[in-house]
Amino acid sequence: MLDLQIIILAAGEGTRMGADKPKVLVDMNDKPLIVHLLTELKKTDLTYSPIIVVGHQAENVQKTLGDEYKYVLQTNQRGTAHATLQAKDVTQKRDPQAMLVLYGDMPLVKSETIESIYNTHCDNQDKITMATTDVGDFS
View 1 (spheres, rainbow, N blue to C red):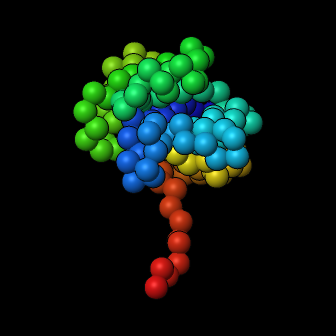
View 2: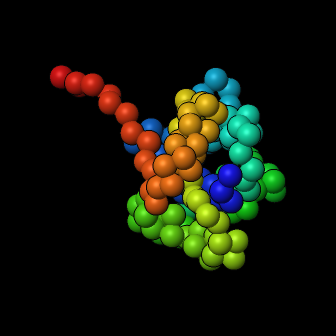
């Protein structure tokens, strides 16, 4: 197994959701979206210590999730790549062999999917692995 670093992007405002809180804290089945993802991560056999990139209402996210996690701040929300870059200093100290970047607002991702992505990445000795899906025709 490769030394793994997980980065969870949780800096977005969620304005399109019409919420008065960050989208990762919007409830689904009485739990914030990000809690569903973290619960699934804990079910995996992966060894990891996630870095959570926070931004909009960062204190609220940190208060909700507690001090079990390492947080980095994205002061200006400039997209996914910029958010991921905010974790650079922390990840360089560890120098992981693999990184898994997840969106904090993906409550339906299952532990088996996360492990499958990681295992495919390792088995193929890939530089980059991206999970994609076909959502069909919206028309």
